[in-house]
Length: 453
Image (cartoon, rainbow, N blue to C red; front, top):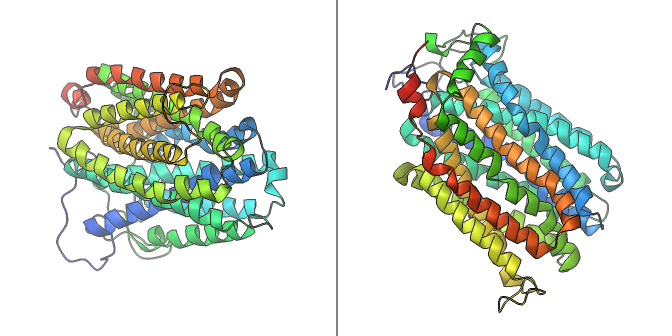
């Protein structure tokens, strides 16, 4: 493979006065990427698990909970704008992606700090919702920056495996933001949970603050160093040039169909997320901590394992095959759980039986993480190397749009359809996605477009 391709770099073995750099240290690079993904998961787990269950415990409706969680997802649907922006502007002397990671991590910490000053968050859902929205603008920027760094530095042969560890690390963050911070919620409110969250995000910011991307770069704007970017790594000359390349990259059947998969694959999960919060806590009588201990607790570690295993299997058998298997199992899980309604009388067990609910949650977490890790590997490969970072970011935004569509649809659907019908419909929707995978050639962009200018 030509070394000009994004994502391919030989390890540099020569000694350097700047030893703490990510290009020369594969293990340090992996740890840093994973820790930064933990930072993404902490606020996500807090909003979708801890805060959502906190609201459900206080009798809030599906519509109210879905509105807040949807605002946490919305910025991720237009995060594709960050890719071209980062490929055009930056501070090359501090690295191609690192300045953006630092700015995003700082914004994430400050926005959480702002939420901590809102009294009685459950009574100010509009304000909290918009602060969640602002926070996730910075969170999505951090995600794009970290993904772009991974695309720049990872070899193709390790993408599935490393993506599995990265996405799995997000589940550790979800555990910290979910089950752990849920235990910090008291009768007095969310103050301690916010404080701990701020400390964790501030500590994680030390990684990009103290590590360089490449040997010889500046640690801070006023310290010694200079740009170490190769010619093919330089920032683009214009936004027009970038979008021209991106238009060509999305002109192929496989790249377009890969986007269609991203737009539909997580709609079902988005629909069911707020519905299950209300079902388990308000209808089935679970306490908030009982639910978060599973969904945001040990279930998260199953998600971590699912992401790692999914990434390894994607490297071995191909990401399309692993994602397809995950979709089939997820669809069967939705349909089976829908038929286990006490009113259906179809199955010998029903969802008043806690082991049935726990099994459903764990299967959902495992398959969701395995599908995600497989898709990440597929999108890195299906992208045209010339604009791989920007194109990959666009695919990630499309995936989040899928979840957002599901969340916004959830409140509407819950008013017109019964729960068994909703779960059955989600299962059917998950199966429909399978019909797209066979028509995707993950290497089409490289075959057709090559490395043309």
